[in-house]
Length: 141
Image 1 (tube, helix red, strand yellow):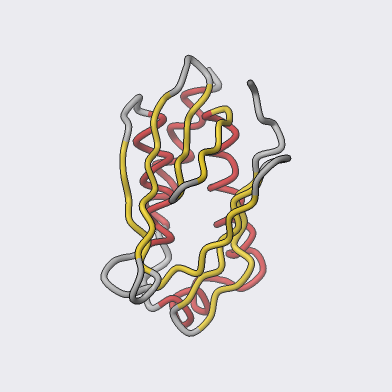
Image 2 (tube, rainbow, N blue to C red; image 1 turned 180 degrees about the vertical axis):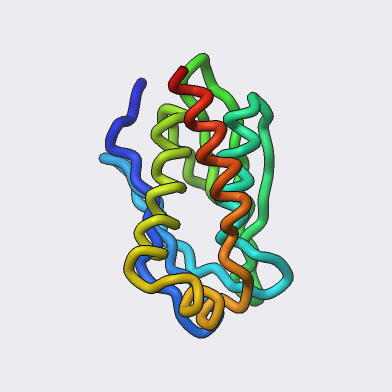
């Protein structure tokens, strides 16, 4: 089943916390990720890069003191399965990758890198975003 309504948004970023909403027409998962231990926001880019390279991956988002596991795998030629805690989303790989890119581009456009770094306590992942852009361009050839 293709899920063209899959969205990934960054609703709030302040004081080292990020409010990320993952949704489709049936489910919605809201996570309040922490900047502690590693850059959880850049982890979303890492997942997209791994998937575009045809590799499954697993990441952990820290919620102080809890953590949520994110497992991403290729489900078919075009679709991925994204398991976030107990919820599983199935969506087209390119849709997921573009939503990740859109999430970062939207924040950058609205607030800029200085505010991102001040609020998130990590550098803006410009290099990782460029790798993602390159891989997406390669997919469109």
